[in-house]
Image 1: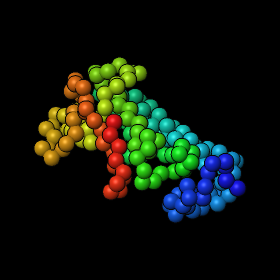
Image 2: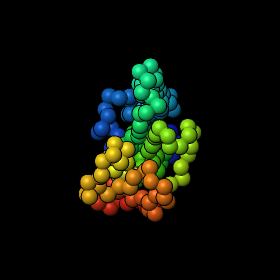
Image 3: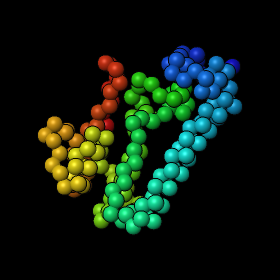
Image 4: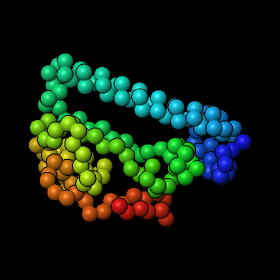
Length: 165
């Protein structure tokens, strides 16, 4: 039994990717909640280990001089657009990912930037933080530089799906 408004076509891609993860073929509200619980449990596990890393850096006296970058390669649908997991689509739940940066001597904790940034900005930023010049082939921007960020950010999936912000 599917939730109202959902069709089997919504799950075909997910079924191929993750058979056995949880019972997709019996997607009741209870099983959807179970899938979401697994996802949030994974996030909690990651948070726990990031906390362990931060505690160790503090214990060793390295925290105040360590650049920490936390991000992801993609998001999850979690029921948005009647889809689960991930796929070749450029909807916000997949394309927008967290980017948390703890940069010693830069912005105070809790600072939120409205700049448009992209994961391609990470390599040039890390190079500059280490005192190195990024290779000319690196297309990203140094996030440490004050400025407006990108005018547009593009995401694409496959040949025909593109999104600009």
